[in-house]
Length: 129
Image (tube, rainbow, N blue to C red; front, side, top):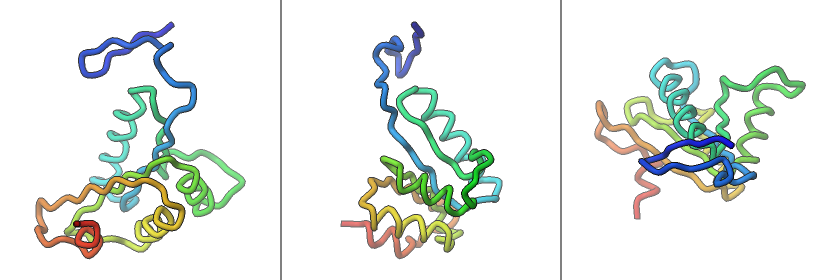
């Protein structure tokens, strides 16, 4: 039986649910700052042992095309985390993923970085109450 600690509390492997939360992380792909954040976030989430995280670069060999593989993973996810830098805007691939989560009513978290560009994206404006 394994023991792990989260926020100062000790847990045993018996406390971990058998069915893990399926998390999909979406952002621009192939840009160093996004790739690093996705990898670090994946590691942090999976260290809780409560979730399995899909990021595009971690998929292995498959009989599906890359696009089909990540589209299937997104549609199968319980939650999608979007990482968006206002300075970069929303690229077509990320927009496709946004459209998919809306179509399939997948719970989503949107993180907007406004460090260098304070003006909100149209998406961020549309999410405001």
